[in-house]
Amino acid sequence: MLARVRTFALEGVDGVPVTAEVDVRRGLPAFAVVGLPDRGVRESRERVRAAMANSGVSFPQQRVTVNLAPASLRKSGPSFDLAIAVAVVAADGGLPDPDIPDAVCGELSLSGEIRAVRGALSMALAAREAGVARMLVPEANAPEAGLVEGLEVVPVATLTELLELLRGLREPRPPAGAPEGGDPSPTGPDLAEVRGQADARRALEIAAAGGHNLLMVGPPGAGKTMLARRLPGILPPPSMPEAIDITKVQGVAGLAAGGLVTRRPFRAPHHTTSASGLVGGGVPPRPGEVTLAHRGVLFLDELPEFGRVALEALRQPLEDGCVVVVRGQRAVTYPARTMLVAACNGCPCARTGGDCTCNDLDRMRYARRLSGPLLDRIDLVCELGQPPPPALARDRPPPESSAEVRARVLAALEFRAERRDDVRLDAAAAVARLERLSGRGQDRVMRVARTIADLAGSGAVAMDHLDEAIGYRLTDPLRAAA
Image (cartoon, rainbow, N blue to C red):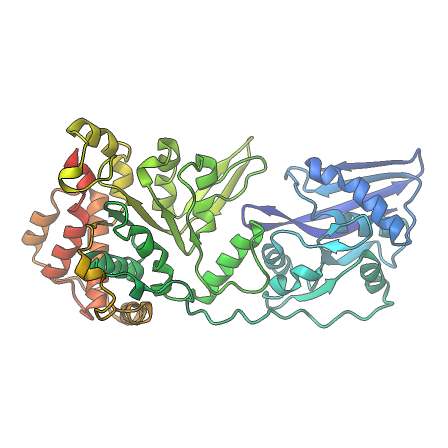
């Protein structure tokens, strides 16, 4: 007998429909899985056999062939265990209908318990698009999959429970609702803890309001890392589509805690991270740090210490907002719309003033670790100095908190949503200021100037807005030292 069960594979961060077809016929006992399975899928034969035996279900002593269609799509991971087990039982006559209308996904333990899998939200979205009415998922994945409206999500804990549901011997549990995502307001470190560095705080506010890439250059201890780690506290909360995107990525990466993610991610990989770790890759392909920071912040501390290949691999994702990874004639696309925030020293010795021991050649070599095309994709370059002792005094009034700065950022975003795209500038004066920049540089300067105008509540970009944007663009101590 032939039985079919619908399930889903992961391609990038999206779910792809897969049909588990099982044929049981007379012959020497055998259990074969075809359809481009990887080792993890092939090992499902032993998990399914043991789970069925420990759940009181006899495995057919005949020739069992499992096909995961479409056969042209590579299958990886243990999420097909449950679909294969259900299809085997149905093909052996253990279910009323050999064609199961529901979609299932889950990993089986040897005892018959159903374990969570990665990418439940992506699979649930794909199930809704495929017209599936009900999806049976592991109990731990139900809150994540339950975020999808228009799809009944039923949590199941064991293979026995699932088979009883399909036989009509048990009522399904109420559809798993998504848990409360909590207050989207940030609870991390506060910007009021950073003393001094008024220019850097201003650059951080502009970056948050416009989603601009930022590079901070300064000596150790100036506050570069402190500022970067406080950026999420002044960012606007993600919209519902953005929160769904973040939850999908974290679910596929195995980082989701269940339910909707309501805070923007902040990723800070070490400078020894490889190119594939930064932009994605491997076999099977996995998302990199730039994708894990999708709709959030990617912080690269000690930027020149990253490998040249890894940094150059960021150029295309920063421009296009996505990463296309090709491995073994297989192309996978990952989203990568992230804010890049980087920090570095002004020279290799990282000393200031007359204590610097670097010569011109040392500074030139250090500057050349960052290519011009990469720096061209950075909108704001800010130089930090060591704050004077009076600025660090605890008896001084504290600077603005993250909540105060965040309020201005939100006001700028509301103003942007309501304004008309009106740019009134002295054309000759603007050309004179922008002539030293590349075409990409001119576009990015105008975007920064537009953000500065939004923060000021101005319906038009004034020359002082443009001058401030150019000041951040041209203030590049690394290139100046070279």
